[in-house]
Amino acid sequence: MIRTLYNWTMIQAERPYALWILCVVAFFESTILPIFPDAMLIPMALARRPRALMYGAICTLCSVAGGVLGYYIGYALFEAVGMRILSAYNCVDSFHHLVQHFHKWAFWAITLKGMTPVPYRVVAIAAGVAQVDLATFVIASVLARGMRFITISGLCWIFGDPVRVFIEKYLGWLFGAILLLFLGGFIVLSYL
Image 1 (cartoon, rainbow, N blue to C red):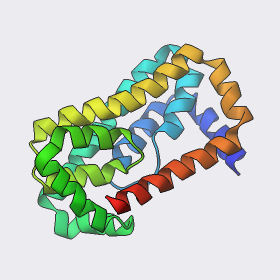
Image 2 (cartoon, rainbow, N blue to C red):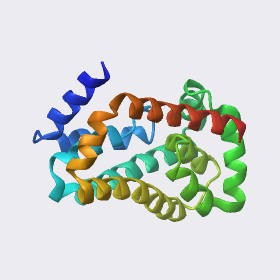
Image 3 (cartoon, rainbow, N blue to C red):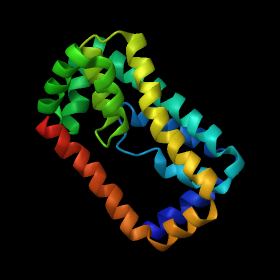
Image 4 (cartoon, rainbow, N blue to C red):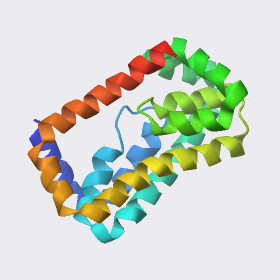
């Protein structure tokens, strides 16, 4: 199943509409989807290496735009929408702790948590509830998400085919590691 999904993603990465898929996934991952944009970014960066850094930058911008929507959900629609999103991911308790961090250390908390497996949607909603200055949120998010996505796409650009060979050889292990990181992000978030 993992191999089939990987092959499908690699085929999609070479199609003309791949950039749109990346944009949609990056945007909605920041608000509601439990899908990492990396799953589309990496194959796209490997399929078209000269465009890898551009893909990383576009992924960053779309992710931050989605984060602004998440911020707005926390700021203006928390009871109606935000609480439902947090409940769906079982992050309500840790969310309150994040809000407290944002009152003291908004820029650094957003920057650090935006680079980790902690779900970015929770960071964005918490920033909105804490009424973090929007400019601070956007700058910290661009820094955090850019460091993540541009680093990933940069590594694909620099190393290219050896990265593809490594991924294809160890796909099962890599999928397991990514799944553990994803679950680990929720576990860490539940103890914050």
